[in-house]
Image (spheres, rainbow, N blue to C red):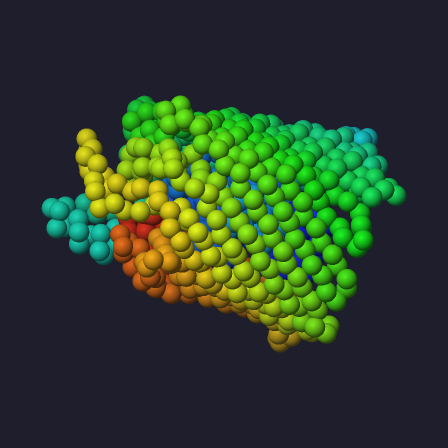
Length: 636
């Protein structure tokens, strides 16, 4: 059973009102891709921005960027990934211990920026409990065929009295990605030919400028006592990747992050524990126009701190209260300066409570924030968003779980939504903010049901997000003249919008045949996003269906999985429809020795042309074609 630790009392995922996912280190390795979004893509309700291998941000239920909080050990990543889909997320999935995906009432304890959900990437550098082993570690290495890639990660942990030290690192190097046919879609090729392009110049078989190189070195040291711990960690990430939208542009990214975390637990007290954590980050990436030609420089420097206090049962209620504060300075300097330097400070207080009465229970949360956004040209804007949630669940007999929740959400506009005023060539848009934008408000409803009995489970959620003042980019129909090309002007505007959808998951133990223990699993998800005055929102994923069959025998695991994505023709005015696709993946895992596992995997075995509607580059950059991976993971 999966235990969720994100907030409040640790509980089994099946006891949470809304759909929640947790991946351990082995499951992350099984799904591993170049970026965080592509690694999580295909989980129920989760898709990817898929801005080529170097940059992929998770999308939950059709919402991404500023509506999905990506955390590193419970604290925001503080990078530039929400500013543009071509900016990488600095939470690297390679070599981490655990990833939790949280939705519903508990997620709103992280603020309005978690309307879609929370993704917490946990690397375990700061240790809260002494490991059972004095010395332990894990190593992973793999080769991939479709991009001539190399993946390496390692981790060691040592206990020295009350001190615990952890060192981990990772390295990824991949070349241009092989694709099944032309990089340009049929519609894009036709348009290019009409504009006078030579078809012989179209990229075919390989996606130009899609190479990636990542390297990370991280270290942590903790003191762990009987009822307390305190520790610090430093993380250094360096990444270079091509911007597929522009064949000569590549990005060099560097982030240095320092973390402190400490906690106390109390016996025989109404207060169970107090945990304080904080991070300070220096982030910079440079967009090079060619070798030795630096262009725009993006920087983001800031800090974030969080205090959580968990209390014991008070009249049956258990929960957490706390406060959070952050300050960051974001700037884009150069020819593609889409926003002038802007600072954002935020302070929030929150409470989250649960009441479990056995066969039924309730939970809810409340959060209040003050948000100040100050631009050196546009001045300061201040907001006071409130977020509140309530949910209830009940057990109907031993096999059925029912849950329902409602949440009132408010989100302050971001710096880019308020003060953007410049070209963004990666998405071929000229962005214009609006400093009169109001708080984005919404009401979210969700109903969940699960059934489990004798090796079979079936669960699902139906949800609706009803927004007032939803902030989105609208094509004005005008263009901004440029030195190289004219760019369509997109304004940040507000209007009513709804997101309606469902997620269904099932697992079944099929018994034994031919000496093999068989199991099957599947999922279906769908979201529909519309403007209340008519029209569709852009970059919304279509319905997707996953089905897998797995067999286990004597330390060998084999799996075959199919994924179908329907066509997407509910599109915004400026979008083109996206074709459906069906892919087949297969893998074999072999325990070759105690703690040593060999992985053989093939993805997209039929070499299907896959274009994700959630990708701004879908017309010029398909997903990878057939790809094989051979890897080995050892723990000791």
